[in-house]
Image (cartoon, rainbow, N blue to C red):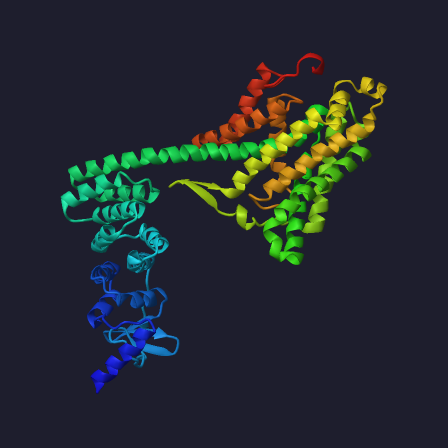
Length: 523
């Protein structure tokens, strides 16, 4: 009768996803004892390929397993099951929770993933391989070997072979360790390099150490290219941001000669305009939230342009030709704008959320992922630059701006309203700063001090590139971004800034007109 009840309980639990092929000794060895012994018992059970182990592993990961009196129990809500027989039972009063440390949890996760290696769906098998990478153990070599033999996808088969080699690198057999080290040389995963470094430190056999070192050198050489490309991309991304910030300054300072110390605050206004648009979409158009950035682009431009036009009409138009007074006046305006933002939005940073299509990134190499938001900023900066160049070179407003810049009196004599052109040009430069703020909001928090971190760098870009030269702004912005990131990797962020500033000072001493000097009548 007791046997019949146990069998019936197993049959009922089998329909609920629980199987009863686990022996009491196996369950106790996996649930209780030192981590090394538990992992050994777990791998032995997994190597048998018995799917009955899977529900028990899931229960261990869910902290649903307890031990008492040499027995193991699984507690699912109000139900208490004997882990070995699967029959309903009563939980002893002295039952203790099974505690899994990080190492044990990783081993359980890898064991659970091992059961998915035989799935009929490629995506499930690929995820199982990825889940096993960080915690593969020699005890899983057998199941990995079987999975590799049955795998039909060439890419997954190659990954399984590397995974098996990572498991055998700890084998007691010298030949197996050498073969595994040699095979791992074909990996481009940083985790494989870390694994080989740890094994190299623990290895005592000279021949095995040579094989591991040779493979480690190969992997590090391959990963070095990813690091170099990552530095170049980060530098180009920073350069595009500097270029975007400096484009507006190239108009207000480069073309109009106004030292606008409030340019950073115009950038901040564009970022806060993006924040406001985001909140409006979240409140009134939640279904279209992913497209709020598209609406924020013209809003950030108009918000900063209107503030810039108000600045020019109220203060700056009285100070043309007086650089010191302009500098002091715009610095005062920058303080007013920062305090106004603190009053409206608070002194703390506000978070601007990336839409779904700007989240994540594209993995080019195992150690190189290009974020979508930074790729979008590169594209956005190129589009703004193209639009700015067309506006200055091909439109009536651009013609008036160039005419007033080159010879204000002659432009006035032929009927150009120079005061109106000044306002339009200053609003244009301010609006471009607002666009830069919109872009910056996608890669960091927005706060009242946002613009302070870019005002000095943007002035350096304009001066280095050549006053009034858009081409110089592009070259100087991208160049400074890349050089800054290269120097950061060598000397750190602080020393890199000092070195960049020193290089710019030396360059300006030798060539005061910048990279692209004005020529002919423009000069």
